[in-house]
Length: 166
Image 1 (cartoon, one colour):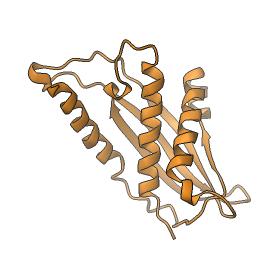
Image 2 (cartoon, one colour; image 1 turned 90 degrees about the vertical axis):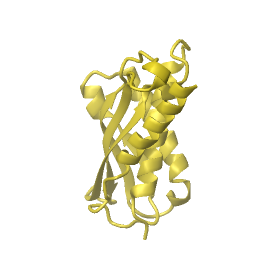
Image 3 (cartoon, helix red, strand yellow; image 1 turned 90 degrees about the horizontal axis):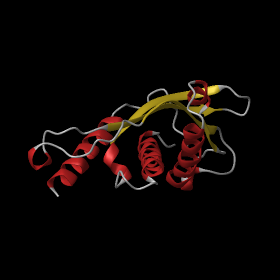
Image 4 (tube, helix red, strand yellow; image 1 turned 120 degrees about the vertical axis):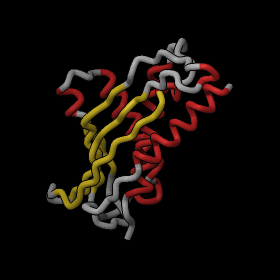
């Protein structure tokens, strides 16, 4: 049980770091006309099905996190995902779960505020890190899919928290 608590604490600390960057180059926006995810940089790196699954998970997470801010007129919010790293999960830990290997998953991208004419009005880079253990039991066939969904959800929550409103 101690290793699970340690993993959760590490995750909270890592997530706190993810949202530390200010959205200074992103103008306050009350409403977005739409939310889109662009994983072409991952596809160009050969991520294939994993990139496509991430695009679906991140789109769903963004729509949930920005639910009250999507619709009507306004610029689009486009998240361009430039990096994804799902480390091999080894599990375990040191004595009492402290000091062991804590494999970390990373999701890196940039939120773009895109006007109707395609002009980029604002940018907000962000990187999210979560413990690989957030996917649950490593031996479950859905482990990797849950890891993708978890990191997408955390990324979207931090982005919604960090982007300024009108």
